[in-house]
Image (cartoon, rainbow, N blue to C red; front, side, top):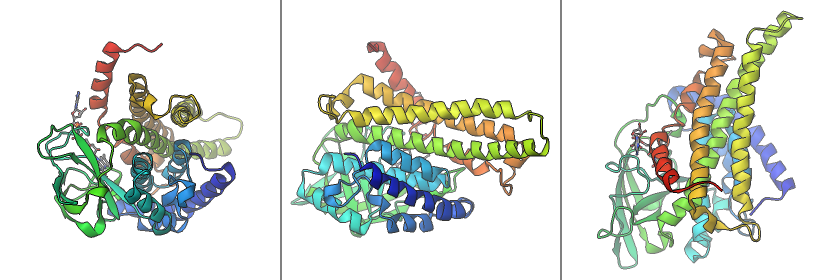
Length: 392
Ligand SMILES: Cc1cc2nc3c(=O)[nH]c(=O)nc-3n(C[C@H](O)[C@H](O)[C@H](O)COP(=O)(O)OP(=O)(O)OC[C@H]3O[C@@H](n4cnc5c(N)ncnc54)[C@H](O)[C@@H]3O)c2cc1C
């Protein structure tokens, strides 16, 4: 699935306008008040950008992951929180497109999405599972055609503003913690009790406190495939690629500010190279490497759909698991490093909150990258896989 290049160019132009005229304008206030970026989301809805991953036959744009990553990285240059919200929403839509399209309930839901511009949140975290997405304590309780589901999530971004939430849970009460399903609960059918405030160092506009969820629905709302397959084939690849692209976007804007600072210094002292021009050149090389990393993995991922290329099943291999984890770890380490360099280059004017060269918000936002599915946890899984796998 790929949007036609002309259609996509138009979409990206609309997004650039929203990034510059809406998201960038409100980013400081969103950050200062730790509030939902409602103006940006309204503009994204108006431009029908929430349906970018929905197939064209259902009225969406049919964007592939590389195109979605271009969108998220562009928005991240203006507001990291808005880009993270959009990326998380796209991940949820992709899970439904790739694992639910054959079911009448999900087909109807996706056909409504372009018109209604539903915003979909995610609840994989849970008190007691300690950051392990592939285990759940809560379980679906089936009664007749329906179900009820209660969950206590440690972190739930924009759940209070969403129209639906995709929730991981055990398939039933009598199955192991790893036998999970992905359930869509709709706004009219759930109640959320916040268990705290979202007053975090960065990504403050994502509005991500803990929640107690009480929900019910029809069993058709449970995605038919096991969550183990959905995670490997869609949730993890889309998350790691889209998150990496937006961390890059945050770093790109920070370095852009530092570059502007250096160019203005150079203008004031014609004929001499400012001392921080060489560090700028070094950081620019790191930024380019990072961009090529997520672009490369995104293109390879999209290429799996080509005839004879292996398809979705290729994602169940250790090689792909490592490739995607390497991208997440590398991007989440590189992006904060680049923002740190931008701060060294701009100096005190980068450190001040009220300076045009400020990278304070960028720095705080990007520091969430190694925690958002902790790198320690991912590296320990990689280490186990590398004991039995050697790249050919
Ligand atoms: C901005 C933001 C938004 C988020 N939004 C959502 C959301 O919408 N929905 C949602 O469900 N969740 C969300 N999360 C939560 C996220 O998905 C993770 O669940 C959470 O960040 C992990 O929490 P933790 O650090 O306590 O977990 P842990 O993975 O338990 O990590 C804690 C510490 O233990 C270490 N550690 C853990 N396992 C190992 C291991 N095997 N080997 C070595 N060290 C290890 C880690 O390195 C880390 O130092 C969000 C997080 C952030 C930062």
